[in-house]
Length: 590
Image (cartoon, rainbow, N blue to C red; front, top):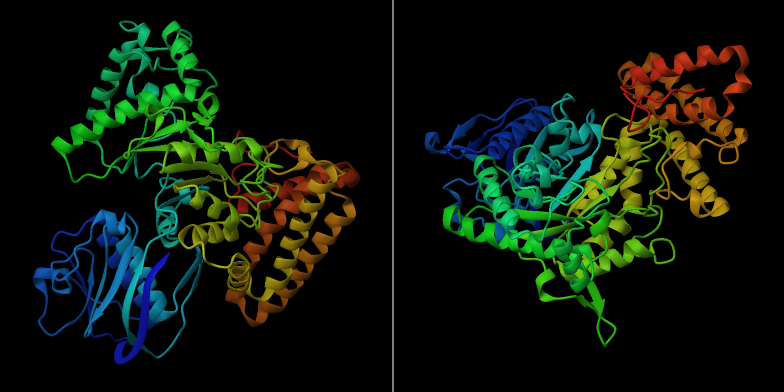
């Protein structure tokens, strides 16, 4: 969100072709975020003006240099600025101009997010995808007087795609995620994440001596066991001391069970639900950890997170005499260092989260949990896990649903896509829209979509947008014509590969549009070879989805040609980096 934005062009030259008088200044002991900010500033300077500013530490400053101060430098004191977590959180940034000096700073990622905005103001810099960046080329760039302060609408933003998730497996993935202005990867900023009970108290270490710490079936912890809780907290202290991170998940195991011992059954009966018992346990842990950190590391920001998941999905709330939702007791109201991560199972993602016709349970869960906690986290989904090759129909709902979550008090969103493979379903557009809207919900989703198509697909943008619109329109028809079972999110299966959903005439129409785009590309081959080579793989990748449907639904129509077509399809998938057709494994075609 934009808190302050004042910019005014000056007569001072920032850079001209091959030359700049400005240097980048880092603190004498820069952190990883500040170092990356300097690298990115110099990289973008180089792309724009063909020159990279010199980078120096603050103590090595030349007295008459024009300077761009990055991060938490001592020079900030002259501006009267002392960044705090309460003001900036992790990702907020400020840009300040004082004379011919510039200050770009935040607490963590905010410093390099500020660099991207500085470059957008001065160079027209815009990041769309790994190999698509816009810079407004000019012989001379001028400095702007700037007073800018921005923080994201959703404080922590993470997308679970191959290119934003697999930092250790995909080249440039970590940089790509940063350039999208995503807050963090689900794991890179977490001490522990997801299902962690048995990580904190491993069964192989403790079960033999303390079987009562665990549920009778051994599938979860016994959350009413005080001895277990004390051991749990001591283990947490050790884990927190050994690893950096801003979040730590105290999350139940990945199953549908809950402890069924007599003491837990009694507490569930008294409080009304397993989720109430879970919240009482989590609050006690959160209070113990907060008290310990207050003594040992009072400046360290750390949020504990518990799961509203399976047996604990339903919030521990009741309706009072005035008809308002209220917590079942004070004991379930989340501590200020405890967040609740809600997972909207069985949600129809093509509809609004608060649409009680289609998403009644999801709406009621968000309403209830927002009463229990003012700091909700959400683990949501944007892919069909059984079939990555089919478009996921939540287009047009991203802004609406992110806005609904924002209004419920959600501060962290992990939107999980295809984490083990790239996909051919306009994935680059999806990531651009998601990351843009998660940062600033005031933006126009349609305008962002048009901007992306024009910049990413260039000469074939009209054809690619028409193909995208055809797929969207078809999904809308499928959902209305075939009802609940066909709505996106109602089920993940090969159910989508049916002739009644995908008439051959429709698929042929899509192929004709893609062939027209291919023809347009051929006209570029001789005249603009570099552009041709840039756009050709983008067209190839996005065409794989409709080809996949044709082969699966109408494969028998191709007779002896089928084997050759399947092999060509698989070869093209490999060329486009497609590693899997679904979450489980590489799914064969007919």
